Length: 406
Image (cartoon, rainbow, N blue to C red):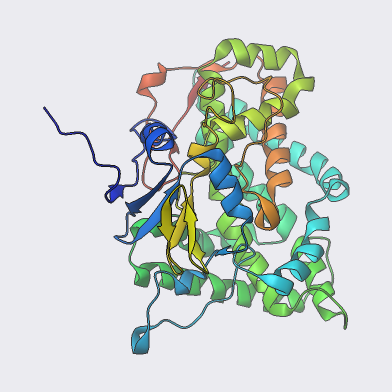
């Protein structure tokens, strides 16, 4: 008989079960028995896992916990210390973060998103039309035809990042999303390459006449004497959007569609009551992890949480995938309930560093589902759910293919 695991000692980060997006089942025990526990991360470093909703939510908004630069964690000193990188929006602090956030937020506000909605809807419709036209025997792979291309097209359309450059920036983006399991040298090589690409792109944009995409709008702001952005901040914006606005949306959209297709009764109710789409999207964001990757914060001073003494410099890791399944915060949390309300999930974090693009992600998922159900109301899996292959190459687990018919 195996001895029970000693949760007072160093534990492993719970692994995602094969063939699922998570959250890992192991978090249920941690929430109950060790809500703050020191864990060994995939890259060999250690950090304090926060698995409960209340603790994770508070940590995201705690000024004593700061997200480090990718080039500064794990810390290195001496001649081997890498050169500092530009901070992404998540890593900016203090007045710098407040100034940039005030400038960028209107780009993701209601008026701007209303402007983008018909364009996103048109892109979704074009992709479905192409999928139907090329369907083989009335079946198609929803991932290749719809889930994969839509987020990249939306990202490029809104930000002004050229779609034709995807062969340059996507490999670096994918490397950074798997950063927790890679060496520092691999992570930094991808990060500096992405920054170099963003710098070169900004130089190209500066030579163009003004446009309506986000990059042009922010560049115009950076030229104003009292503007809220610098040129370096615009470079950081490009890096941030490539890291946070592409692959995570692909993986979550694929997982959300798989979840709906394996809950046909709820899918039918949503198709018959499309006015509930906003509530359904919030539940999909809660129920389906936006990502199981590691969110590193670093303690700036000593603090105690649930009897655990966390020292300045320690990594603290709130886990949204676990927090969003906490029975102390959500009734019957493992059940998908597309009518669940209220639904104060932490899929986008919380506090000043909550994801700036959260509303764009919501809009994109809503439109992707609405257009799909409008065009193909009878859509269903064309294979048994257990035979769907999964992409498990990064912490963002998702179906590699979704064979469907209609």
